[in-house]
Image (cartoon, rainbow, N blue to C red; front, side, top):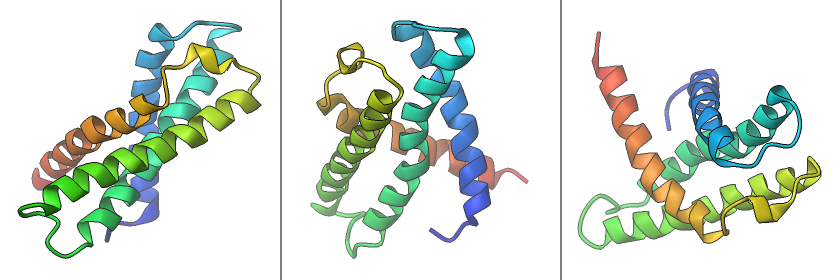
Length: 130
């Protein structure tokens, strides 16, 4: 990817915190605000930290930006989203939460396919400004 890990970590943490606030409103609450926020932050952080690395691996493939390579990238992001969500769901269980509170596994793939290009455009726009 070419950027320092701490820069990726900072951006991922901020994005996960914002995404966690949105998820906190959508998912059922169980304990205190802080405890519930940690749970949803963890799920969001799985996507925000691993997503750029999945995208970076896909972009390293030759011809990924043209022709059928774009479809390969979308399928790769979808598969990566499933893995991110699988990790998040596993942590959700470790926190003692019920998996029935989360959307189905397929939505992890859909989420990363939508989320990662948005983050890429925000990052490019932010890096382009002096």
